[in-house]
Length: 419
Picture 1 (cartoon, rainbow, N blue to C red):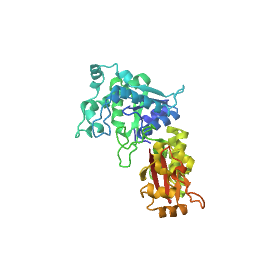
Picture 2: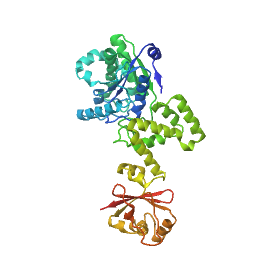
Picture 3: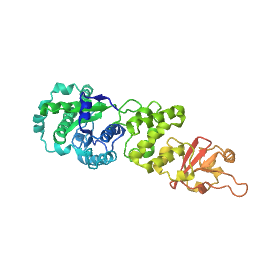
Picture 4: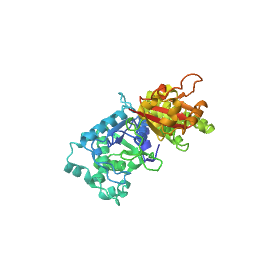
């Protein structure tokens, strides 16, 4: 989990209980897994007996951090920022221990101190201590010089540096942590503390968690995995971890879980012996999904995954909500039929009423059903020796408007029933 460590940091942590902080800007209503990687640093830090502070950037969120960005951010209005702050605060409380004690976690908002500082006061008291050449040397600025960077985003590192100065002065924060792209902003803070008060402060960063294309996870980027269930469903969240490659899983399980070394190494040995069982990925997915979304959401995500691999009972299918049903069968052919067409016998329904989308002819439909190769909502379709052939309506509807047809071992069709 370590990328860069400022000299003297280890000695500081061995010397005394140390207060450290990480900042989270509320530029979106939720944190994502890139934030979770840094948050796990605070979790480990607290478990080792030190004191963590989670800073919600009510002030810096109004400006926007240029680190790792190729273009200027869109600025958010105050009501949106306030709503985002509340969402981020609720998520942070799931991971840190705020009960009284020497290592009690705290949550702060930098708007509380910036709201009382005038522009001229800030320029005089903080701005004079950091030179333009020092700020220009930072990668977050250098990488944007060709595409353009506003004074607003250029000044962000000074604002973040002042956060560190303020927390150092009033809460004895000696250490700031964050992703590797934050190194420049963090060291601006250590420099400000040194120049303004003659104090000493430290820095630790962790490697960034990147997407398959190598780009960072960020609140303004596409393809993010969010911690908020309304933005990334528990099913998709679970699937993200479950689909980790064998090369990625050993690192991810060390970064995102609290499993001890022996447990992880035992899992790796078992995984190597039977990689097709994906034991490493399943343990990773279980641990993180339960911590973020809870046991019940995890159980539903596992059940939904079982559906995808053909182990679905009628009860499991009935328990899928509409959103998860669509997520599980994303990309599956969809057919629309009217409610009246459900009255057709199942042989005709699969061929005629579905316009040949599922089976081309009634004879082929009858042949597949006779072979036991058709499941309707998890129930095997059968042709009785005596009596009428059941109609499609007799199999019931999922969520009151869907029929799931499985043809053979792998082929699914989602039939939507319209009025």
